[in-house]
Image (cartoon, rainbow, N blue to C red; front, side, top):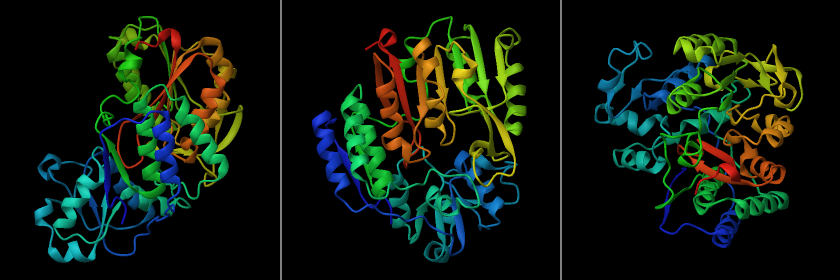
Length: 395
């Protein structure tokens, strides 16, 4: 069962310590345990990920009995759970604890802090939701439950390079924590490197350098959550905001939210309906999956793909959250990144490229930048790489 123990470390690893800890990790047999639903299913967590899990199982036609949540009253009258019971853990029949599969749909807390008390209550079969979604990637684009598999020599060399070139020891700790989950489904915690769930894309090292003339590029804008947060942080004092989103349903919500937030700010906002990639053209893209819409061979329709280099947007801050195509988008952005030297914040947790390929590419392609890694949620998710030009980095 994943997450059977948690390693708690009080000392942040320097480059040498991180290399030793990584080699110890790499010496252990990597596990693969994507999990099909093979018994009656119950969801744990009625929040955002629980809602996503609900939509996932409904799309696949996989039924679940009900939802368990520590605060079920919070969801009373919720339209999303209309007709579905949301129970307190204590109200679950003992028989269900012994015979059902419980999918943990929470990543804002560590896995073991959730699973250990549930085991003590008699639950026998507990698994992270993303381990289930990983078993159905041939039918649904949602991922995040990937395993590293065996690390080859090129992986080991690449990871060593990245561990050496992080800008601080918190980054090394979070990189090790990220790898431990995706390799072995083991949790590591560092006392001085907390997982921060409230500042994704806007860590202090980024926000401290913001000014009133920022040109913000929101790649993978979804419904505008990050764009709206940016505008609030800079108090609506910015030069331009470019929100890039290929999914038509997402664009409809995005347009409504951004253009109705503030009349004056809306005049500085441009919504660009396309996907970002390493070359301009057309590509198969699965639409209508909310957060999970992405490039996929399962798609029957294509979307327009553009490179950031072709658009030549003079961005000062670039955010990429592209459901696994971040590295390809970066390949198509290096002329712009070197020309305008923006702050870059990109997710790295949607596929194996986050182990080392994505950070190594930026570390080798950008000069005089500081590279940081931060975890903003648990279970191998919420991992964001920050590249900050030295002239804007405030220690």
